[in-house]
Image 1 (cartoon, rainbow, N blue to C red):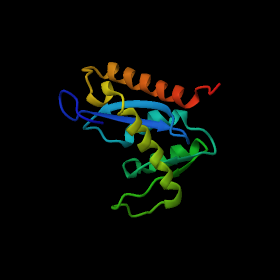
Image 2: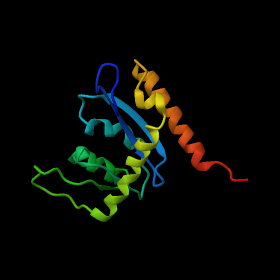
Image 3: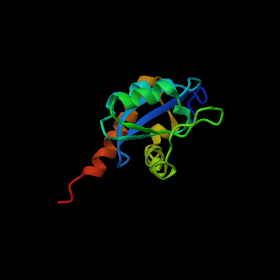
Image 4: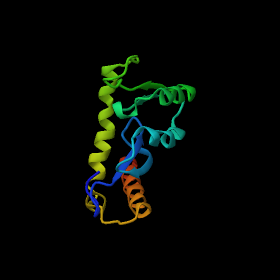
Length: 142
């Protein structure tokens, strides 16, 4: 998510609900793989939901864990995979909600420009921006 003072060194992993509102945020180093970070996000997964993720999260252990939680994974298989998982392209179109969330979060200047040197401070501002997004979606019209 953008440049930091040291370069492209931080990845933001997010779990959002069906409305594109953030439920969980995790930071990892830029050189780390995406899939291991998913374990921290799955704690918020509810039963009878469908998990939409991109190819970076295609792993057998992740699919099993999602199914153990009572949810269904809809993750496209990597091109080098021999066994292709069941995948719905129609459902996958809804994944744009996570992309919209990242677009919304980049409107916060402090997050987009990454002024923070420490990951804990950056994560705190990410969560503050996420709270702002929640409040703007749920504000009273009265």
